[in-house]
Length: 306
Length: 306
Ligand SMILES: NC(=O)c1ccc[n+]([C@@H]2O[C@H](COP(=O)([O-])OP(=O)(O)OC[C@H]3O[C@@H](n4cnc5c(N)ncnc54)[C@H](OP(=O)(O)O)[C@@H]3O)[C@@H](O)[C@H]2O)c1
Ligand SMILES: NC(=O)c1ccc[n+]([C@@H]2O[C@H](COP(=O)([O-])OP(=O)(O)OC[C@H]3O[C@@H](n4cnc5c(N)ncnc54)[C@H](OP(=O)(O)O)[C@@H]3O)[C@@H](O)[C@H]2O)c1
Image (cartoon, rainbow over all chains, first blue to last red):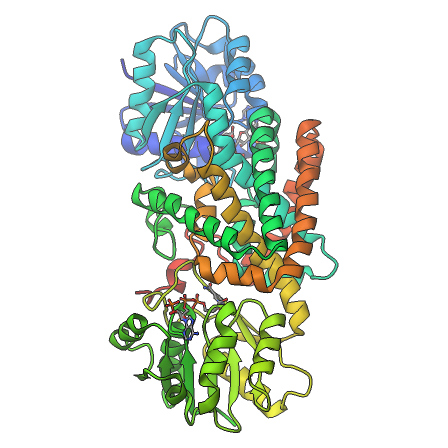
């Protein structure tokens, strides 16, 4: 089986990018979109994010064989409930939420009797809204599927093929493991970036204007991450609390060890850590998840951005 | 006064960039270079980082009216001692070290009777060595001078003009304040990035291969910073210990507050922080220290890299 009619619910960065990517890579698939926000729907029409933007969620999913929920994690239950009356019997309902265990549970509870196959494309930028999406967002990125036990194999295969067509490599894993992995590779980095930018904003000894001026020393990269959407990230931390707290404890323990090393002027401990961390960087560059060029190769990647 | 003969001691990222930038922007200035490492000297000759690379530090500074020490912070005293016998009476000795209070003291002690005007160009990349430098590294960046009390005004003015010629905007401040500002905008971000990459490397539940694969969720930006030179950064933390420890305590306090907010599922506290941090980002983009494009505008900036 393959999908012929895809409904995208939520037309921000992720929803818009899916719409554009499907139109580019799967030209025979019909795309229909809905967003709770009328302003977003209008802008989505202007940009042609999907073939057709409807004002009613029930109509938007009518006859769709794939529905992808692209709303903040905390709005997934509501978005699912809103489309439920229009779902056809053999539709696949999926999502793109950044946390999976709680979201999967919410979707399963809200849509009993339907096939729900949660997903998370590990691709993003710090921008959001209907102007943020672009067709190549998923190219050369990973997409994680977390099908529940007993999910129909042909439907998992169809969703896999769908993400592959958009340029991604698909990996299947358990929702709990997903949440642990992403806590490390995404949620803690965002939390740390937000916190450090907050710390810097509140200092008395150093003015904001100084923080801004001298940000090229490393800080500016944190501010980019810390410019991400507040609603999305609040929802992520509320919905991946356990894994985030666990990883945060590890990180804070390691940070305390570094504080002790600095206090003791233990240059060897610092040198050791600063050397070990290079191996992971090499892996990331080798595997194409970042680039050693000064622009990190993002110039090619987001070429068709707004 | 203006400089006619500039000696660059240490021909890595900073020294090489100064050599290339002077040749580009101040074509009448003669540049002479030295590095303690014979392999670096050879590569510096091949790349033409300076007009002339000498094998003897004393000869390298002979007749120079500006000597810029571009070695790791912990090697400044040694590098200064090595050139001391060749310094002319009215030379200006400067440096580019990332920490200023202890370095200034070391240079003043090592070179009594000479004019020492410490400096720190707030510009860098994660790369080091003689292949890393490029002429535009200092363009549109800030350079901080920390002249000691009583430094001759004409010499401070000449050093200011020198950095302006390389494309930088110069700011004068007290060495102690510099160390506090940079602890926030550079040293803590690096320490946090190194630590988080270390934490991620050591997990049992999440493999290194998973960390690498799913790094596009935010983690990869930390790995870039954590790929910076271990010697340089060990020296920075050893030489800016007090300010780093103070800022680290603030940051860790704020991180604990976020942990409590997550534990209490206090979405409002999170949303509030995640919103406040956007203002600083806007300032950085508006003031040209970063760019809102997906490649952060680095494509233009490092154009003539390697
Ligand atoms: N951003 C990333 O880097 C990234 C990466 C991977 C996955 N994700 C996940 O992708 C999802 C969407 O994120 P995004 O970055 O695309 O956010 P976004 O740009 O803010 O888009 C979300 C859109 O959904 C709309 N919406 C909110 N509640 C809705 C509802 N009940 N029904 C229909 N539409 C609703 C929002 O409208 P309003 O603007 O009016 O609220 C907004 O237009 C999140 O679950 C996030 O965790 C994000
Ligand atoms: N990297 C940045 O982003 C940045 C930004 C602003 C300021 N800074 C500061 O700039 C300085 C240089 O950093 P960098 O990034 O240019 O480092 P780098 O690329 O490693 O270059 C330093 C060079 O100095 C050589 N060296 C070491 N000890 C020496 C000595 N006693 N005499 C002569 N040469 C010696 C090193 O040789 P070996 O390779 O054999 O050790 C190396 O070639 C540091 O103080 C750093 O804090 C760096």
